Image 1 (cartoon, rainbow, N blue to C red):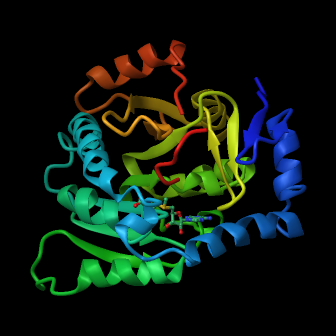
Image 2 (cartoon, protein in one colour; image 1 turned 90 degrees about the vertical axis):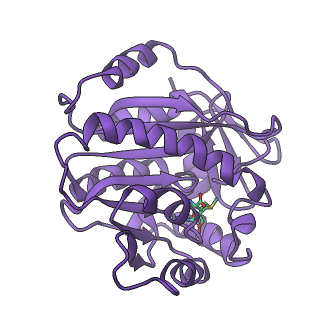
Image 3 (cartoon, rainbow, N blue to C red; image 1 turned 120 degrees about the vertical axis):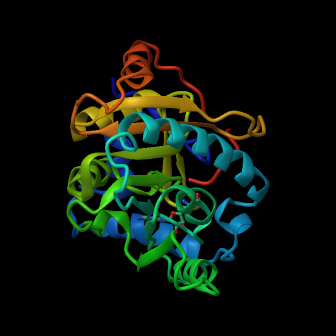
Amino acid sequence: MDEGGLDSNGKVYASREDMWKEEAGSGIAESPKRKEWYQKGISYWEGVDPTVDGVLGGFGKVSNRDVIDSNAFLTELLKERILPTKVNRKLVALDCGAGVGRITENLLLRHFHEVDLVEPVRHFLDAAKKRLTSDVPENVQHKAVNFFCTPLQEFTPEPHRYDVIWVQWCIGHLTDDDFVAFFRRADIGLKPGGFFVLKENIARHGFVVDKLDSSVTRSDAYFRDLFLRAGFHLLKTKLQKGFPRELFGVRMYALSSVLQETAAPSSASKDARASKGVARLKPRTPKRCN
Ligand SMILES: C[S@@+](CC[C@H](N)C(=O)[O-])C[C@H]1O[C@@H](n2cnc3c(N)ncnc32)[C@H](O)[C@@H]1O
């Protein structure tokens, strides 16, 4: 169902379609409104300090709690889907909209031998490169390797390089069409058995457009519509716990375009089935909900 939504000034949109037409024009790549939508997002982040507190909109204090729940979610998925069959394989992840490398440093490098980062804002990527590559011994087992300075709507990964593609607090910058096109295109970057994790703020209903940073916070139902449109199955989903009450709720989704048996079939498929009927609605940075 195409529910309406709001913007950060309280303006009402009757539908997603109306909102995108107004915010990003016709959606075609050359449309000036679409260019303006993306440029505004980049300009916003170019004015933000390249620090964890900066990329988290002043809520740097939630970073540890965020990483704890992400780690639990990822560890379960790796145990179920990847580790039993890939004992000696080099594990590789991609951190999308990576900011200053917070997730790579605190989460992905704990699990993966190599991590690549894709981030469109140069001073964030430079800060990430500095913190992730300075003073790293040659023989270290887990390292950040490639630093791509590109927005997701223009990024195509190397085929079959990644076990996991992690997309957190950045997909709100993409229009629906670019969201769907990105997931379809980036799917080629996954190895067999690999999966996406999307971790995002969730609006209680419909959507909320942030006029300041040119982004949209979508509802759980909205996300699930886009997963369907892109041809993705939900493997597992969980709500983030322990964040301050004034922030939007945050949900993690594990996604694959292939419905397949896991190496150790277990709770993953059960969770996916169980969660299908229960679209629990709750509210790119952790953000105050309106
Ligand atoms: C809230 S920060 C999150 C950074 C990082 N994911 C984290 O959780 O620490 C949002 C990030 O999205 C990036 N971003 C903005 N527009 C983007 C786009 N079109 N494609 C990819 N990333 C984008 C920003 O530059 C910023 O680094």
